[in-house]
Length: 197
Ligand SMILES: N[C@@H](CCC(=O)N[C@@H](CS)C(=O)NCC(=O)O)C(=O)O
Image 1: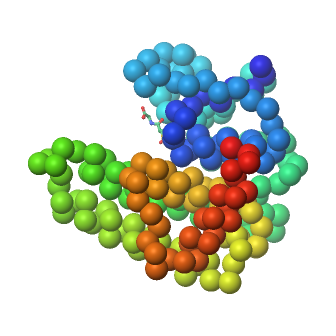
Image 2: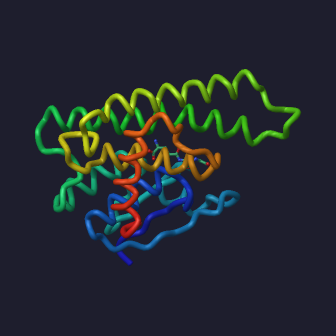
């Protein structure tokens, strides 16, 4: 197979790439990287993180670079907005999801994983408070919108969706009930992704 995705199945960044490839109707093979043996991944990509895409011999590391590469190489259907100002906003939201939301989500998750006596309650409470803020910002941002940017499904929706999906699945928590616009948007995106991922 000419296209291989090295992944951890439940990594949100790998899910992001799978959704992008599904949107573009690309056929690929997945290689589940064993967490304790990354020799093949390191040999191929020179580093230890997934996702890594190998496409016709070209090796691309990092979900953001992979998505950009896929858009440039297989432009139709588009998953990046066309207008420059919309594109800038979508890339900013992608970055917020990958770096800001993800960091808070991981902090809350890893703290909550610890045995009861070892949990640092202050760290956990702070991460949960930050998550509330992220949901609240997102809820306001979604006012009057079907999708995050220019009323078109884009890389912005995909990037935020996978982080919330991981939040729900890893922490077994729900989107706080007061953020109805986030919930409605999430359901809309989920409906679209269900048949494709
Ligand atoms: N910025 C990177 C983040 C990738 C990342 O954090 N990958 C995690 C899995 S979710 C990883 O491979 N961590 C190394 C490990 O767990 O051994 C991207 O967008 O692809």
